[in-house]
Structure formats: C-alpha cells, structure tokens
Length: 121
Image (cartoon, rainbow, N blue to C red; front, side, top):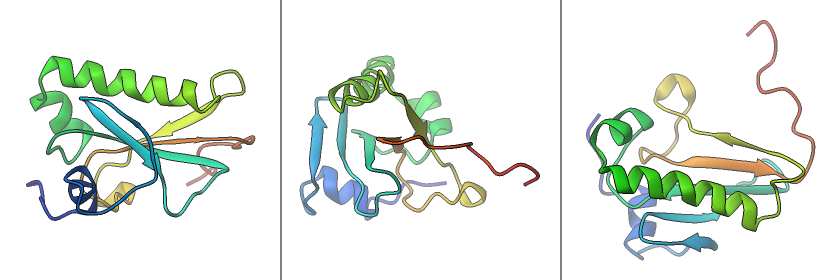
C-alpha cells in the first residue's frame, strides 16, 4: 500500500491539524485519541511515511525503529500506566480495521481492560 500524504496523521505531523500532545521527540509524536475507548487512550505515531508495522520494520532506519518503540514505553511510563498495566495495539489493513493509513500504536489504560478478543471469533 502506498503512503497517502493527505492522511490525518501526516497532517498532524506537519502541524496542519492540532492535536492534544502528550509527548514528542525526533522519532515519534504521541497524542490523545479524539474518540477514547478507555480512560487513557493515546496514539503514538512515528515521524515518517509508514503505513503499517510491515513497511516500518522493513524500511525505516534502525534509529527510528528504536526511537519509536522507546517513545511508546516512555509515554506509558509518563501516563502512570506501568504499575497498573496497559495494552498496546497496532491495527494493519482492512481486516484489522485500520482507520488511518499511517502506522500508529494505541496505548489503552486507566481501568481493567478485560480480554483482548471475544472467544470463538
């Protein structure tokens, strides 16, 4: 899948659309989800044109991959989620219901989250 430079996360990275920023460094930007699914629901996106985990891990420079995943851990820690626990999720493609074609990791927390998937589905 080709990267769409007009997607909302690309616009956020370029400063064309505001976000409720939680964290930013040279590798990643983290911000609150506009439609939270848990008391804490933050998105972490890499600073680069990557649609999914597959193209990110295949094509991104090693320092960006490392920096991005460190940012995810830093954000979870800054949000106070490490001790109580949290969930990370990255959807890829239509079957996973990826809504924005820019790699992003959801961080969910702030309450017991229950099972990941409904059994039998």
